Image (cartoon, rainbow, N blue to C red; front, side, top):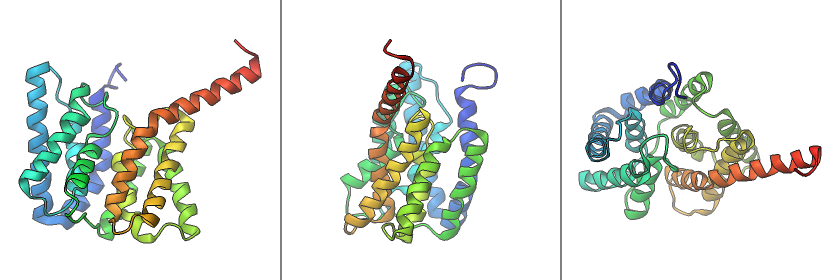
Length: 260
């Protein structure tokens, strides 16, 4: 996407438009604490982007607003300023900026930051989401699908597996709000999710499978906690899923046209 209006920042702006319903509802119901967490995340991310701009001439991207929203919404509560700044800094630098910025990262920087905070400070509670905030993930996903910036296969694969496991009684209703928000914000990220058509379905299905597994077997974990853990493992597996999809395509092509 380098010609005409299709630049990196065009995609970011479309993502921001898609996430707008989710952000508005969360800020409305979260009140002043939500605004404070978002402002802190934006400030820290802006600082590190400025550092890399000056040190490596690395362009600042508006994608930092998406990262700030995801961290502010999903980070454990009661961490305090120092711990939260530490986690945001680790996620921004090690998850994105050292790779060249947004569009070149392997794992979503918010996923890295949230995993760091979750494993580094396990005693702090993870957030619960009110029903209106969770429902706002649906229009966010629909806008992203309509504009083409969110991969439909990832969302469809996750929804299909979640529906099946929920119908079988393997996935509880309590897991769905956080899992849906994490799916839209982290798993369906167009940069870090799988890129081939079949692998995207596998990507979404794997995420829903991990959520189901963790919900059943991870005793004492909050829905947001195991949803973030599922997002981390799924992101790490995305390149392998693409390799599998390509291997299947090549094998099918060889059978059809003979060895080449």
